[in-house]
Length: 327
Ligand code: TRP
Ligand code: SF4
Image 1: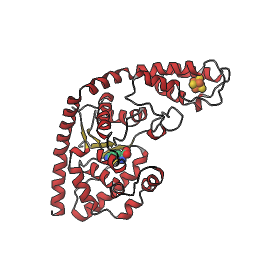
Image 2: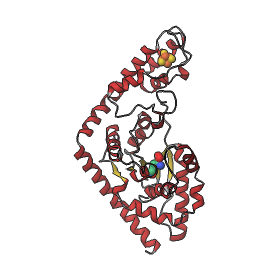
Image 3: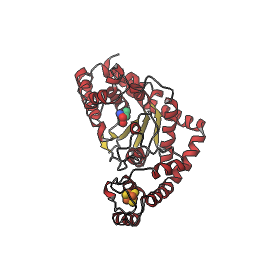
Image 4: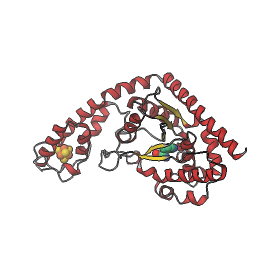
């Protein structure tokens, strides 16, 4: 059987944090071993919400590429590129938009939710409404069969499938229907115990220098009931312990679980252990990151080559599409 093509993307609207690493990135790195993978820095999608101030966009794109490479994405195995460097995404977005009923877009659950929740940005725009159409174009321009995404993206994938069916109905069987591959959500909370998120200001970024990672860990919230050193703690509700479960060796996790409950270990000591293990776990990553970050020319060449490879596939699809639509 022919191997299915994989496509996924991330929006360069900020720096990547540990949640991205243990959620999406690790899975992407694994997938490239036995699939043909396309990984796209979706800068047009960043513009759908962050169109007013684009001064950081280039910097976010560069850092995203560096984080991806440091995490182990390999341009010899995967096609890594910037969305706007492959104009076919935009052309296909336009052509798909012709067949997408407005009602479908207005009904996407994330649409209304984000209009309500994202403060300080006017999202009543044509571009933002069309976000899922652009995402559909990203996927089908490579005829991808598998789309690794988080659960929050499922409505967008379902819409992609609907768009594909409608397009194929009008113009013949041009696109395959892609399937979602759910990435396990990261078990890492933010430093304040809420979900790790840029907007909460509780993130540990992959680009944080080791000293900053340490100081963020030392300032993490713990079991709030544990006010004094002698109070027993409950690791089950402590974000520091959630980190231990990801970073520390099994014996250590058992020990901390036990000692926390009988006040045998203090929070400062507990966090300091954690910081050591995080540092160890990321030391290779940080070395690789520094290397890639210091060679901007090489990164740009890598992305240009990725775009060229992507374009070869995308332009062939768009050629078929134009023929099908009789343009
Ligand atoms: N909407 C996705 C997100 O916010 C990003 C994205 C854009 C994407 N195009 C894509 C993901 C295509 C998968 C496939 O996470
Ligand atoms: Fe959390 Fe560790 Fe303190 Fe227990 S000892 S409350 S696990 S930081």
